[in-house]
Image 1: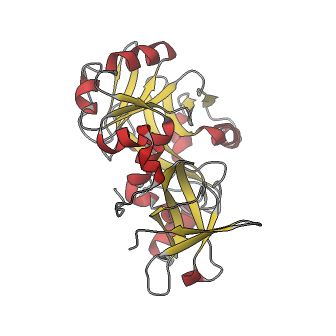
Image 2: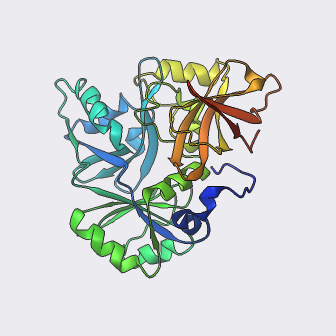
Image 3: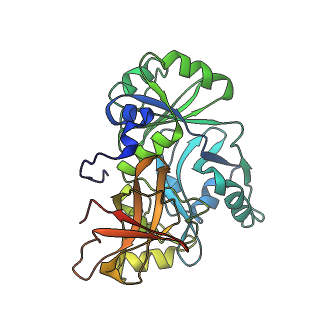
Length: 325
């Protein structure tokens, strides 16, 4: 899913990492992401009762987006899930990995499941652009050619082909630097902020500490990414999520905005069209990069607001939104 945006001459365009991500092929180390591992013979059954995706469909060759929700149906985390021989791996925002680890561990009880935080032992990276697939094929002999497919290379790690055509890499620490050097002639090294910008342009939200427990998955368009399975059985928050899908009236959707101020994830944004109803900045790439994804209210006409404002106790900035439905 790619969100359209009118071209603008924003200050962030001069950022070299952003320029590389816009027009070239890049490799980024994703230090903002953490990894939880779920091992043990009951791991699949345990996760099936906790997560919005169909864990039973996640095998050694596949992956899935998903959400972990509160009983009220609001996302405590969203993630990419895949399976290794050692168990299931969940990549999520690193700043919430400890709290999600603690929360999920409460429900293990007598199940044969071990929840581990592997954020310091698995190095996450991302590759994107027209040269990415060919470059990675030289490293991973069994390369995933279709979206959601997963493959692995002994001594290197795992590569996941995500839906928007990019690739997520879960690497061993010893292989991460070697891989960057090996791919340097094909893929430009960029900061994680450029990868977050690519996430935003492709409509991929990231729940962080600033936005935890604030959004039902549909408010972040997460069902459009395949992050919710409406045919599976019960999971935490399922009743609210299903009711919103089949019986409720969704008043907020995620949309793309180009902002001139440094609005960050979790900031409320306002519009004259909507009175005191606030939109929520879901994701921001970085202070110098312009685009954000917002979960905002529809106006009375069914359109998203054209002018947004970031309020603080001292200052109000004009924030133009350049895209509407």
